[in-house]
Image (tube, rainbow, N blue to C red; front, side):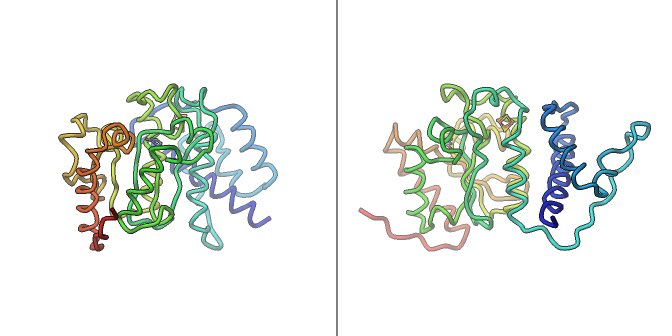
Length: 266
Ligand code: URA
Ligand code: SF4
């Protein structure tokens, strides 16, 4: 029961954080599925807690601040990531929700030194609900291991959490709609370095339309976090000689982190 209560409070709290985030981003309207509202309302009814009063403010006072949520004990950290993933799973903020099989919130360590950000799920990712599990993902794993990490020691995610049909590039609108989830993940995970994989990741995160060939290898900052743009592993599959540049960029990342550069295999 206490668990259910914590889950509900966490959902409401995260919903509130997400809406505030959207507001900061200039979003003024959010469409909500009737089923979502109904499910929330049922959960609140079942709980019959103070959350009810907070959520159901009388309509005559729409500006009333929600009652502060009191936690008797801290919510487990991973609850935040789970809450983000749950909201992503129910998200219909952009058109990509109509063609996805599974949402792909991203996965990995909850205290990663490095966060890898790609473009969006492909067919394999859409089928499994996991980021970078196809051919490009295998190459990303090799890159991570060449850096001296295991895959589960870093975080792996994408700009958009639903697969664009036929792997087309996500539109600016889709990226903007989805970005608050990634920002919440970054705020929670607090990586020391973000690696942007490919031009789309740079466009989505840094809003910079410059080509990746020009941007790669030079440090940028995302909300104070050192951010390194490099080529996308899918590009490396088509153009293997570019692995040399990516390795240079990844070595720059290791230097920044004060990590030794492992001797290259082969
Ligand atoms: N390409 C991406 O950008 N992301 C994935 O998760 C897989 C392939
Ligand atoms: Fe929501 Fe992002 Fe999926 Fe669009 S891509 S429906 S914003 S989770």
